[in-house]
Amino acid sequence: MLERLVASVRERTDERLYAAVARQAARADSGLPRSLVGLLEVPEGARFSELERLRQAPKRQSGAEMVRALKRVDDLARFELGRVEVSKVPVRRMKTLARHGAGSKAPLLARLLEPRRTATLVAVTRSLEAEAIDDALDLFALLIATRLISPAPKVGR
Image (spheres, rainbow, N blue to C red):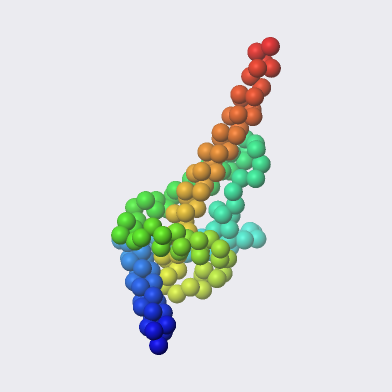
């Protein structure tokens, strides 16, 4: 009996969390939820969704890969998720929501009911934006070290 009571309280708390995040996303920009759901669609001629493309970190150390990494950052930054006020949502809960969404494929996320879908997409996209910036900075540092600083002594000789 106690177990069922705790489960029902958790479920109601989760629903309030989803509603609060989705409400803040709509308050920041009324078209934002629709734009985020657009990430789940597979573009014409592509093999996977836009969200799957944005999840892919740089794999090689090259200038072309740096351009792709910066495009990934730009594609995620266009959502301007910094406008979504989630300061009242516990950080741990947002990270858990982002982890759940990051581990799920786009078709599964598309089947989630509102407001859970919007809340999950907000959390995932915010997390991906931070990861994309980190990945681009790491790649930049690596390119600087291997292509600019490392050959410098040889060129100096």
